Length: 165
Image (cartoon, rainbow, N blue to C red; front, side, top):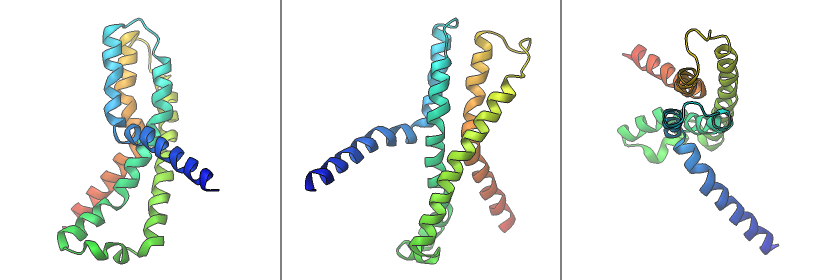
């Protein structure tokens, strides 16, 4: 029993060591393809595109989770009520439920936006971009599709803050 708990704990720690940097640094990884394309424009980058397609939404889900309560936490911090923030927002069950909903919603929406991007980008005429410039264009626009749920959440919050004044 104790051995299985220790094994599970070690697996959880290893999983966090691997996934947390991928999720936090995810947006920074989107510059790697530009160096690869510049170094060898004739190479096949489909493996890299697949990697970004499947791992990008994990990073998006993380940032959606963080962005979910960021505004209310910052407001509570400015007002000096960090200790009572969670109770003000509805308690542990309400805040964790909201965070979980936003995280899985961000994950699902990110995959939907990515699929829509792949479908839409297939209709871009080759006269607009061909060869390495087409891949360059795809990798340049793809992060906006991946992080669209976070961008939309931030835009909604920004619009609400403008309306408050």
